[in-house]
Image (cartoon, rainbow, N blue to C red; front, side, top):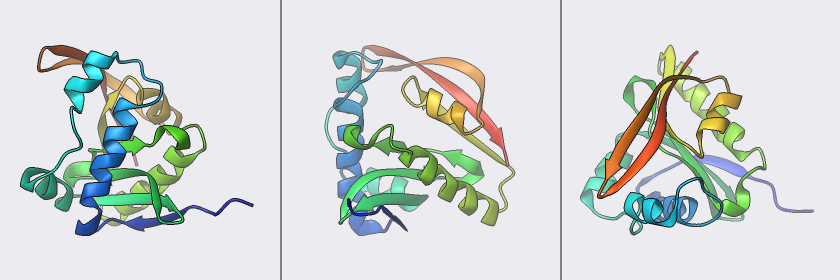
Length: 156
């Protein structure tokens, strides 16, 4: 029997490992983005005061097994889901939905009536499955690389 997942809210000591999870999620495993796009998006695991300040301003739910973080999702002010990253070996296991359910609970507690996200090509199907609708297709540029993404909304 495999160990069960636990969920908890992040604290400052988690910031470094969350950067590593994000790096792993973007740079490893299957992706609709090519290697140059992935390297432009996340060249290295994020560090520093800007990263810390950004994370501190959000509610972040973490999923772990035996102390190993599998993924995380964040809720910023205004119902914005800023981060949703799952390690490649934990994808397609229902983890996205489990993280999302906790974000919904927190959003309702905070009085939000709408959730919204800028979803990558990889994340769009998962957000669609939990009830989000595409409101706009966007193209962003990071460095010299162009990325397709979607602005998506879901009423609570």
